[in-house]
Amino acid sequence: MTYHIRVRVGALIIENNEILLTEFDDPYRGIFYDFPAGGAEPHESLIEAVKREAREEANIDVEVGPLAFVYEYAPHLNENKYGQTHTLVMLFDCTLKSGSKPRLPEKPDPNQTAVKWVPLSELENLELYANIGKQIKEYASKKKNIDFLEEHKLLDKTSSLM
Image: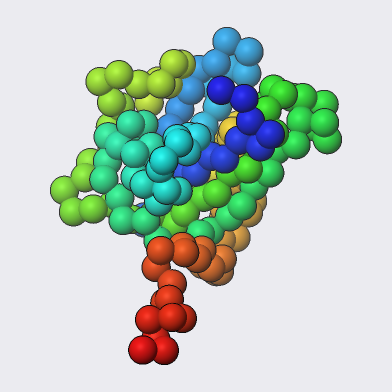
């Protein structure tokens, strides 16, 4: 599939001063960490994509909360260090549904080696998919969200006029 800009979503899950991350051992980058995240598929809302990615990568069910971050990777501005696909990533503040226990799925993504709770204090020392450890720590302390509006949940002006 080709994209002008690929849209990815992720689940930002913070509990007890720890963050849930997926671990990868990439032949080019070595060990790095990401959130349960991935590309939105055709005919799938972003919220549906977050839930699917959380199940696929960490074997969990989540409640998707507000938008926490928007991250852009523009290859031409970054010497193509993560490839040539222009990507927009939206991270949503999520919570685990009751009974969900994070673990490596039976069929993990290529190079995925673990699902781990990592103390927020260690975040800046890890190689993350996107270098946003400092911003995540700041977010965890302030919880300043971005409104995410879904058209299908907005009040229809015509129905309120009747």
